Image 1 (cartoon, one colour):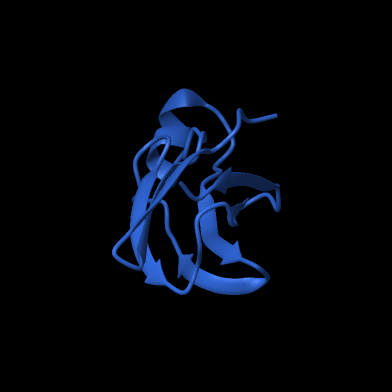
Image 2: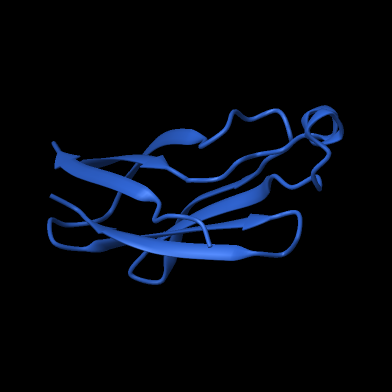
Length: 101
């Protein structure tokens, strides 16, 4: 199974900035064909804080290996946990958490 998603979340002037790097090979159709492997890439990412969705995106095969995302939102406090979830083409899901500092 994939390694843990790296998550850094910082609160500054009421705005939380999150940087997350998902650990995934992200094999597009062309790359998979060359490598003689099965196509598989992240199709969606979502982040929640206190049960509320703060970031949600549908993705495609055109993200790089181990995709990095950065986003910001309001309405959280230091010590709250950011729950970051991604789902890939095969239906595999990975959820990791990071604490807001």
